Image (cartoon, rainbow, N blue to C red; front, side, top):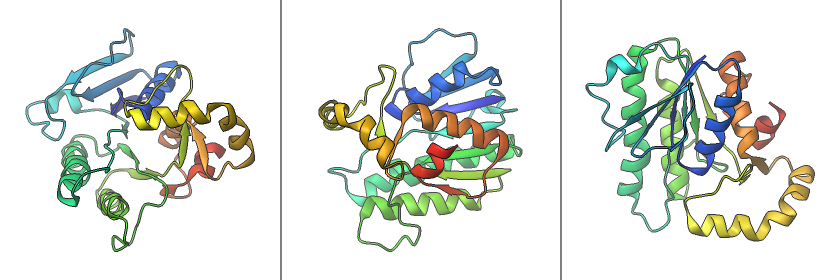
Length: 219
């Protein structure tokens, strides 16, 4: 399996990259990002771009892939809806629309979030924008597309969030997280489980196009 990965320097993306590199069925991972992941692995290639929404001129490098794991994303805290829409909906759809004609047999997996609003009409700004993004991706002519909606994510294997507030929360709650994860799987998952679930869905598909934490953990 050949995989394109975005957001590999972020918390979720780091976890997904780790699982891809460990999986014997993955032969290549192309990380597309604004900065390097600073890892050496024979499976890993990097395409460093100032703006991943603009893939023009790189089409030959983007052809022949089986899956795309889109883990790039930003927090909506302090952002206007216009800016958040640009960094979430516009960026993601521009990226995906470039890949579709190059990889018609691709499975596209997008990391969204619990409580995403599929109606696009709710009160929560971020949830509306994420819902609009999910709906648009599901309409694209990929072989298949799946929306991952994790809730609270426990980072494992030394992975840390780039958002200081989030990392502080993880540090404070770490002693209780494993206990809670075992008791409330519908709300919690780990970076390892997300990565393994993505690989399973890319290989075998799934009965639902929108996956909540319970689906992710089950996979």
